[in-house]
Image 1 (cartoon, rainbow over the protein chains, first blue to last red):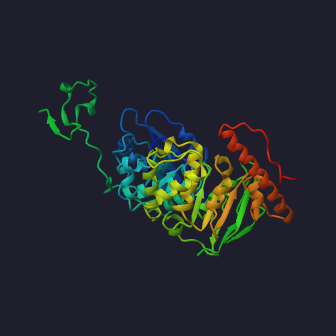
Image 2: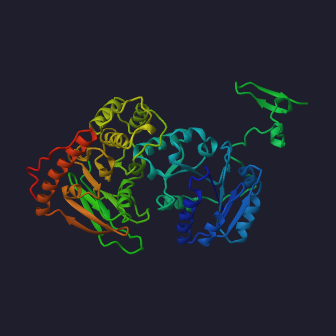
Image 3: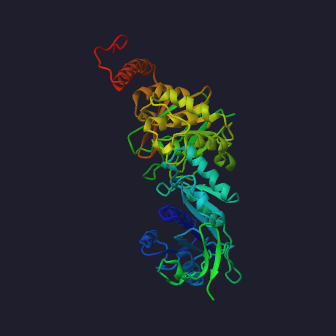
Length: 233
Length: 258
């Protein structure tokens, strides 16, 4: 089973780009299944189904969608196998961008919106810096100069990635992405690891504390001046 | 050295083969792209900008000097053969003009002295002067376009120049076109403006996403183009007067004999 993990900021065009790429893969007779992970709501499942791709939707609710995707990855692969698919595509809606949902041997695809400004690549962290492919969308909405600066910034953060300029409306660049998916090697989950550890999350807020006053906080607490303490037993 | 660009036809929006199968554009030529809105003019320009290899919606293929461009030629901005002035009227990047130009010069491998030259040139195209420390996002439509034109002319100095609807810019379009279409370049201009369309050597007519036909500018069109230019000058002159708050008392119609 090939495993493709697609991450990206909300509204960056992950689904639109994937729909075009999946159409192209279908023409080449590669059978794919898609799992869409979102937080509270999505109707993207219908979009994938409308082009005849077996689709499953997972809502992570109050859990981080990237963590949720990882806990469910084995089940997702089993399900894709039941569909006789050769390729599982997991589209996940990361939130804080401190995670990278990619595993070592999957194809990690980061979709990033060029209109979000040239500083965005510097802000988004491991989901860009550990990706195999950076798909830059909405380039048609900005000037060529801004596009080139954005691309340079992406490569500053991740010099080894392949950059694909794509347009979710016209499908431009999506065939290139489909080709990369086609060429991806199969993954076995037995020894598979994440490329990047999940963020530090060991305080009382992680387990549901809602009070803001600092006397209620326990765990590893970091101050804005960089000072870090452990409070608790 | 780029001597020619070849566009090999693909498919229109209905998925039918486009009527024009091949267009060869030679060095020094200015080619217009005309057609109703939504007819695929910008897509054609987009295909050339990316040096498409049957990998876009239209499935067109672009050859440079009869050869397929390498992956690096297509993607590395330092090697980029194509400079494009798109239809965008505003910058979205949250930066100062000077920083932005320096960054772009770095991307293109151009000298950092370019920034001043770009601003100077831009200020010859627009009424309100642009300064280095201005925020890009607060520039007016005219200022933004003037800056984009000057940036394409100086920093993105490429042998192929693509221009999308320069007439919408609110800047001096003839000056802008002169600045962009340097000697020996391959220039394509998307336009709705008959003055610009008739100035070109040939024009590609677009319909429903496909290249419908290619018209070579006729001798009589060239004569008409000269007349139109005089009318255009007259109107530009009047526009400047109105903009400057003058009252128009008379117009000089000499030489505007239709």
